[in-house]
Length: 369
Image 1 (cartoon, rainbow, N blue to C red):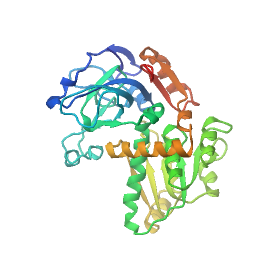
Image 2: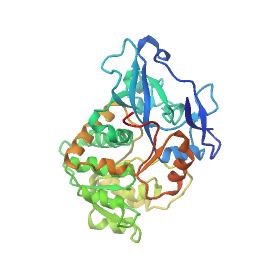
Image 3: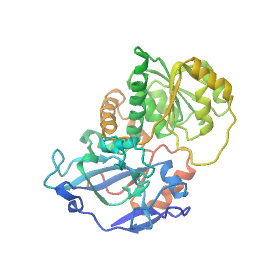
Image 4: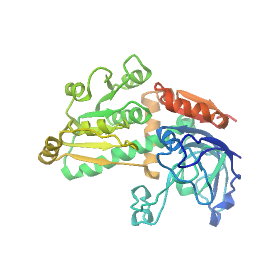
């Protein structure tokens, strides 16, 4: 079967390759779930892996199949699989357990191992192929009513984890009633974060470089989010009107914005960092002032990466609520469909060059086939 892969460590090596079709028997104990891939979303992670910033090939291979945002249909299940059956629409989690204590108790997204295993990212093949097989623990059912937007569940799972962890941390306050919330960035992750926070009833402001009118601004305004363009106004100045913020969800990919966000937190505020910055950029910040305010005002900043099954399931619930509250909104994020795995060159071009794209995705097979 065909697959889109890169050669880790070699820049701009994205190419088409062949893999042996998997079988439910590849998973021991009768617990295999064979899935035919329908759609796969791609993002900055795939672009950075193709740029050789990180990523590793699975043992026995000199290439890595990319793509970690999956949506598919179950074809066959092993005799010991319960709760999943052929015909079910599904997505799959990304990280797989290592050897740390956290891995052993099911919190593999908090692994302390130096070596980690992520499908399509490091040491495990991803989903930009025709079929994959996995264990039921890592397979999440998607209701048929959400099949059109199911490929967005992986980025939404990262949003869910960040918000959930923020509230877990803020239990330290006993009573915490955040009001003002900011989202930094209006890519797919930022848009989904804004949606999730609006569904929880927060007043949300979103900050991004794209000047209106634009689809991103329209999407945010459609769910009641105040969109602020940074095309002509620096972030610290632009945020004064609506801040300081009780919660900031940072999703820009910019270390400068991450550090500037530290200056925009309210007392007892919390900053959620999700950006993966693989470069070597240096920024200058007012270190003494930021440190003083963090200490005196009991502020918190934490990083979050990847997600586990719980966060995917929370994403399914929010998607169902979003379809009720804002019908069709999620589908509007699917801006750049590409037909077939053969479109990998155009896929990478869009990722690198099209600043208007919200979600680029590959239609491996027809949704209604």
